[in-house]
Amino acid sequence: MTQKTSSPNSFLSKLVWTIFALTLFAIFAKGIFAPHSASIPKGTKTLPVLGEIHPVVLTQQNGSRFDLVALRDKVWVADFIFTHCAGPCPLMTAQMSQLAKKLREETDVQFVSFSVDPERDTPEALSKYAARYEADPKVWLFLTGDKKEVYSFIQKQFLLGVTDILPGEREAADQTVSHSTKFALVDRRLRLRGFYETLDLGQVDRLAEDIAILLKE
Image (cartoon, rainbow, N blue to C red; front, side, top):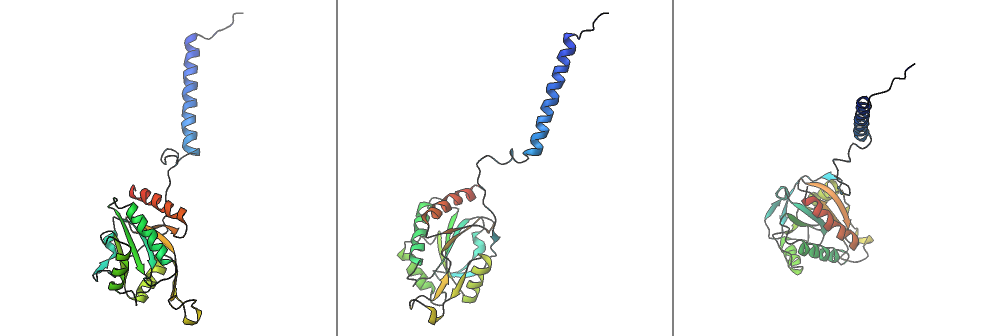
């Protein structure tokens, strides 16, 4: 009885088809088990969308009306202060000032400070306060308006707290308002993208990094 042997060409053909089948399987498996690995670069940080800002019209420090829709296509940072605050507001404004100076070359970045005591923070008071911190009016706005509207805007749009402190609950005569000490980051599409505690320098540094991320979106 003679033994049948495979020809070299037959063996080579089987080897090629085996390699081809294994390659297809590897591609298919990669598509199932790692569907996003090719579309999201490793190490890329993305910021969540926390809400959407619906623009309102307020009064800025020069007395003119300002529609927040003008901030569309800008990356902007908001905070909430009042000019006669003896608590955290001076520190918050100093932090904002440093950030504005650090990013002064970024023409697509805007800074906005909303007064949480609009009844006393007239445009004149805001203008003096802005001058104290050498705020450039082209990139840093100070806004005031109707108290009820401002409070509702902060609470419903920025999802942050602000409330009056009753006279009997005040620790100091000028402590009239309780408000958030956070910076809020808004993207070019008027979407809320992050909060940063101004009393934590590490978070302020992270804010600068996140601004750079949004500028590239």
